[in-house]
Amino acid sequence: MIKKEIRTRRIAWEIMKKAAFRDRRLSDVTAEIYRREGDNISDQDRRFITMLVQGTVRLTGRLDWELRQVFVGDYEDLKEGLRILLRLGVFQLFYMDSVPDYAAVTTTVQLAKKIHPNLGGLTNAILRTLASLEDRSIPDENTPIANVANYLSHPEWLISKWIKDKSFDQAKALAEWNNEYPNLWFRVNRIEYTPAKFKNYLKKHDISYEQFEHIPEFFQTSKHQELLKSDIFKEGKISVQDPSAGLVVQLVDPKKKESITDVCAAPGGKSSYLAEMLNNSGSILSYDSNEERLKRLDNTLERLHIKNTESDLVDITEDEIPMTDKMLLDVPCSGTGVMAKRADIRWRRSIDDILEMHLLQRKILWAASNFINPGGVIVYSTCSVEPEENYMVIDAFLKSHPNYSIESAKDYVPPEYVDEKGAMVTFPPDHKIDGGFAVRLVNNG
Image (tube, rainbow, N blue to C red; front, side, top):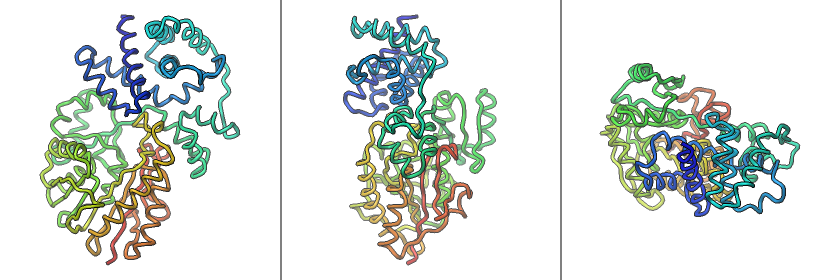
């Protein structure tokens, strides 16, 4: 058994090391290693490895903060491969209830010996000292920002920015939300299924759930891996989608007689929900500028049996498209509203990325506005909580396009998600769903 336990942890270490050293997305490296291992690892082992890897990457800053409490010398002098190993051990020690303390220490020490014979003693001493440490100096708003950022396991630049843009308490709350194991929501495909039937299925399979109070086809469940492998998922009766994305589609408010265009449509979650809201009638054009992502869009539409949607490879900043009554513009963004779901994104972003996104978003919105019929609507949306990607884009657009105005979201989504300017805003610590921003822009002709 101990050999198997060490092997799963070695795979976790290898995934993290490869992602860090080659600056690759964690999900891509994980999928690559799982393909290589094939049937050599069970589904249960994959779940354990995924939880261990994602949790350790998500809490890298906090784990380093823990390790600095007991490390004698300059922690930064340790090689990254050893730091990754120690983080894996500390994560199991403090944040995985399913792993006993002795197993967390023993397996990490044994793995350290396999990586290098001299590492076992150091690893054992650090983890045992940390396990017995009782007093820790928890940072607060009077602590140097570098220590606060480490403890909250986010880059210093991002914590500083959130404190400046919002407040210390909101920055802390958002970081802590991102550090929790993420919620996963499913959307019932009303073309193929009903919320009542899904409830019966969940009860029959002893899966606990919570139904989103504002949109009845959205459910948060336990045992989501079981659902992802279920026949009802394969048959297109349910999809993975957060209610924040559902609220954006509600803001579009699609009608059967309207022409509807989704410009940045892949992987197809919002396009398919638009189609489902129209009960597979009407007409939707779904575009994306990336060929690989377009394949994912097509796969989504096929799995969900969507018939009223045509997809095509289109770059709105370069290509002509037909005039439309309504357009969903779910632009590329930094993703700071969904950092809980992508463990490594916080460590891969920089302030430059946000500024680059701002410029790209402007380019897309300016181009898209040329294809809206008089009286038509653009719904501009992001999964970002950054003002640079939200109101700073919209304010600049309205200044240069006086024929457009904001129509308040209050007639389309519940008031708790509508701010004083009429935009739809979701903030994870407050609303317990992904963070995002969306605004209805009306072309007044």
